[in-house]
Length: 208
Image (cartoon, rainbow, N blue to C red; front, side):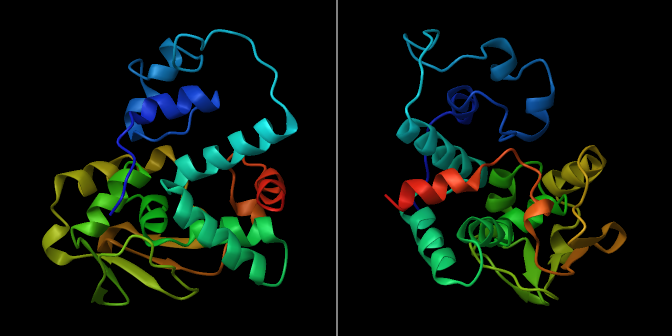
């Protein structure tokens, strides 16, 4: 599976905001964005004014990096969202939020989406009682995600669940921490995505 090997801390600096790609590290003094809150590279501290295209491109890159997606996959998500009824931008955000790795992160089974993706790949989760190791599996309302019994003593999962109080589980999900499982109560709406995302800029970019 193709993945970016660039330091994720550079992504936060490039987008000029914390994307919380490293879990607890992003909350501490070791956060690279706190120490150098300007874009990476020798010209990073220069002041630049972005064009309309530049703003659209940066917004698309930001969304891709938050959810850990590469261009080809993200483009496919957009095309499917555009073919659905309703606002394309809202459909796009709903689709990426319903990915198995994103739901596992939201439920608190991983400290970051990247960590949750690794746990999914290594078969630590069941979906509706069946093992699933494909991170981009799109869940539906009523689907149940549970930690495999043998994995309930896994250090990364226990550590993440201990930190889940630092971020709220969204209303569209239901967490049963005692049984290491969660459920998609209903499909998320736009107001459930609290990240600073302007999805209309992404739609405008792909509509050029």
